[in-house]
Image 1: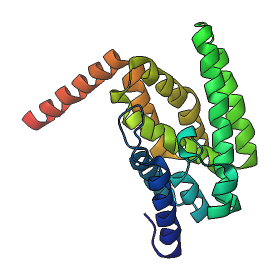
Image 2: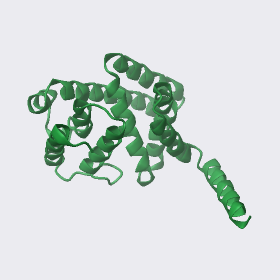
Image 3: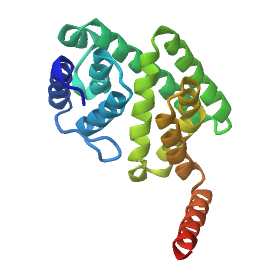
Amino acid sequence: LPTGRTAEQVARAYDFAHQIHNGRQRDSGELYIEHDLAVTQIMSKLGVDTPTLVASMLHDSLLPHTGQTVESIRKNFGEEPAALIASLNQLQVYANEAQYQKHHDPQADRKTLENVLRAVLAIIEGDIRVILIRMADCLQDLRKASNLPQEQRQIIANEAMNIYAPLANRLGIWQLKWELEDLAFRYLQPEKDKEIANQLAARRAERMEN
């Protein structure tokens, strides 16, 4: 994580997030505060600015259990983090609506992805930092997805493979693209993933013997 003034602001955001989540866990069993810190660490490696790091730490701060609003975030952390978090919340609303539609129409896969993609592109036009945080959020979700029911894993993996990995590629953020694709492939094509892993292990064994 960063140092100096930026580190102080991120630490203050961490304390705030720790308080409002109050030990709550995500569906994966990961604590919200652990997830938020991991997302912020991913963003820190991308070299983003201070408001983006603060928003990364607070990206779950508008969930119902927190009792927070955009105005309370603005009051405590300023306009930029509040605006980023508001846009992230809007993006999640679009995604939830698309998944609701998919649940009631099993043939709606393409329609679902198109709805989410339209929302993503609209928000990117406002501030590209929003999608960077969402990419990091999705990546951390994938890292913990083995603890989720299969249907939830599939939803996260589909969004990663069809929306966020291509966007990361388009933006030239290779470290996110590769990990998003690798983890998504593991859940979308588990048998092929095992086959590839076995082939790589066999090749390594052959090289060691030679």
